[in-house]
View (cartoon, rainbow, N blue to C red):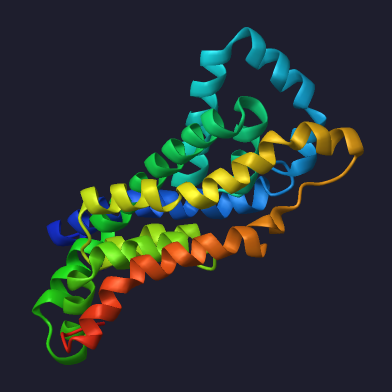
Length: 246
């Protein structure tokens, strides 16, 4: 009989690097199954009076606790990110709520970005850097336009938040650029949804549900698309001038 070979140091190291990402993905799957019927608009509606009463007595604790929950939702890609944004507006108003929402979402995004970069990103980016042909050109194009690309994937409403957190880690984006572009890039959409949350009191009183399609209304989508065009301008200028683009 032959004994099972023990894991090699290389395999142990790979498992250790990938462990944070494995945990995040596992929790995300479990959360999608177990929490989708809990973290919803009806839960907020049914518990709104208790939440407001607790906030009135424990404002700072409520704010810190809310941010902690929001960070966990984003970091583990759990369902309920939109509900959390609405809750921030409902509990703290548009501007304080937006500040809490954007800060917590950025912290959560940084957590999953670091997990992805530790597990896969560093090796993949290194392979792209030492590659040749099309792969090398793509990597060079991304490097030349990192700021523009990072802001674009944050501003374009069609890009899922999870994808915008993972993709930069896989192409070697630095933490500082990721954090700055995430914080400022999610402000427009964050303020819009937080303002919807701030008006939930009237929505509850009418027995209605909030209009989450407001982000795609012309008066909101127009300025966001304008910001997208501004972020893409350096890429366009480089292409027009004949420089290497993506």
